[in-house]
Image (cartoon, rainbow, N blue to C red; front, top):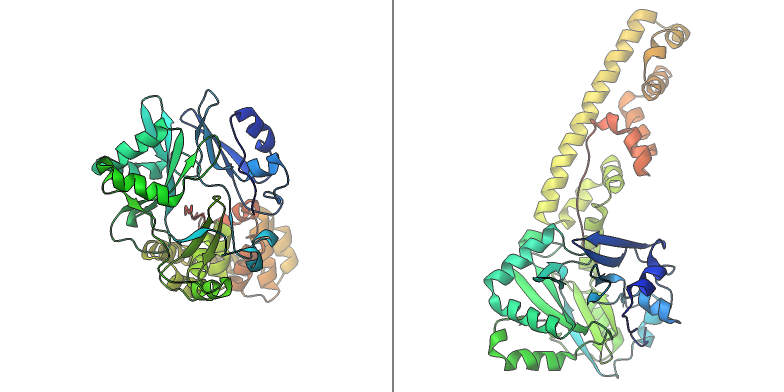
Length: 394
């Protein structure tokens, strides 16, 4: 967990490390090039033994302009306590200088300088979400003054956008743009939080900028902090940030359970499997209102389409029986030849005694493990498509 943050000046060195590498993506948008990871695994983020290993952990939104200049350096990739051998609880030494900070349930936001100013971007760069915090900054000019000052110093201020417009798990009645850290672009050094707070407090032009809050309790031991965090409800958890900038995360069981449920909604095959298993009612109480409403609407359409298909299959089977009686062979040589192979198989199975609705659901379930297979059976639920964007980087 503890290593020297790599100095980064050369886009080509980063490109050679991650372009085309499994687990990473290179996003090109608005003349910017952003290096980001697609998923986290020990292969994507191995223990840091070399400069290259350390650079991989910087690819969490590391951004360059079209000229290849580093313009934005948000958080490095760090892990939960106990998630990796390097973050086992016994290796997290609370006797070293550190702060414990609330972990906010929102979207990471950072400025990305442009020729005439800057845009606000998430981990993957400027997106549709950008307009929300940009509107907030326009209404709170102290943020704009502060962001421009940090850009001039070649530093990246890192914020968390907490809003009902972009709700993850927790509700945020009022929009908040919370400053959580500042990093030097080239060195990767994190500005000490005490210095950051003092600087903002001393400058009247920065009045009104919200800064991340400290953990309110006291910690007798790492074990005590873990136990307290696991029992949290209505909050995400905490971040332990050491003086050298390295960090670990702690999250409550209440939050993790809901986050996993919401994360599952971003994968259509997971949603289809949940519906087929009859588990949707177990998931719904864990979801925010907007996500639950969307799932319920899709659920109604999905089952209505299923029933329509079952009715259509029953009509086909009734037609076959009317033509051929009990002569299954005559059906196979006649009408069945004109049917889609999937439908033909279902009708043969029904002829053998299977219940059509159960057969259709089993056919969908068998093909719901990959997107390609799911597209093959999409006709069975009315060509419905589930689309849910979730960018919760827990």
